[in-house]
Length: 447
Ligand SMILES: [Zn+2]
Image (cartoon, rainbow, N blue to C red; front, side, top):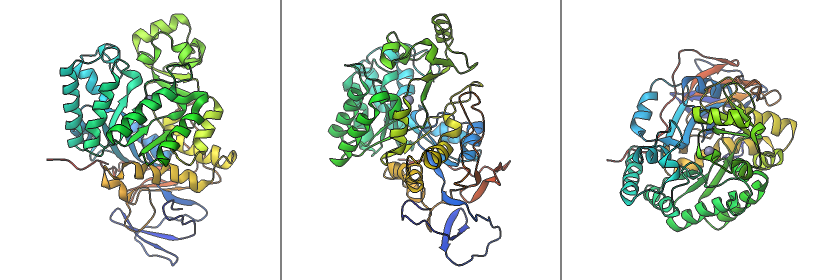
């Protein structure tokens, strides 16, 4: 099944030197062969949003059909170092954005570990600090960052003008801005809708490609209205896209600005709807204070099922996991099961969308999002001669996520073979040990 050409037929696929070289109705001869009778052969899944960029996450993701895993929301302050640490050592392809959050934390001396907790969260930047941030973002783009990552909700001290200035730097490099917008939820005036308006205006005024991350946890019950805003912007010629994960809970750091006073009203939840990822316990007023001081991941039950389903079924919404580093036994399951959950639960069981549309949302659409900035994506997300042999082979009758909120560290089922640059990393449903075919998915490095 190839979402670019629409081909859905029985074919033989020939692979050589990491590339697809032939797609034929006639049998092909090869040194090795995979019997894919009765299975779907699809482009490997491209995950635009995965915070866990370590070998263990890559194993879970390979079992979920992911061949390219990208951290584009928080990103990094050290693009070259980030790529160097993974080159030659990775199971699947990897890539990163240059991140406004980590840069703002460095420039403003924030004490936070991953997300800001001090000045970078709450204070406006001086002109000098603003210039330093612009320079760092530009340096990251020159080093081949795929995008500019932003999380305005985590850096609420950043003025509207600061956001526009960061967009301008991205525009000069045709880099999309992948942004967690300023507000979430439905309480006027600080609504998800107003927050999406801010970044669409910034994109329109600066000419910057825009990608709004996890639209369901931003929109909550107003998710359909947010998608409508993105659709309308697209129809008027703006390069704006969005993504979702197929779950009814969000996840982030409890220490972050998202849990500043007023969070219950903003998210429409209370302590018992927040779960400490290390132990799985639901919070109380006492444990909230204790763990917030400690810092760490929580799972937040705030997204209506109707919002998740609407976004998963909508043909313009890309699927992306927002997977988390594995910091505890009860981390959010999305990093381990997103793609199989869409294909097994929403396509097969719920019939919320058809299989080709779902595959398009996890292969071709993320590739199209990035290919202007990073031509390497012109050969990903497709089953065609000349494309990279990043391929996921699954049984549409059995594929399913196994990672649940109770038992999140489970491999997905029904994915028989996963190839990364022509090298099998999953064979007969089992991980292949000791192979590192993943390559840097990176924009061209500027002189
Ligand atoms: Zn986010």
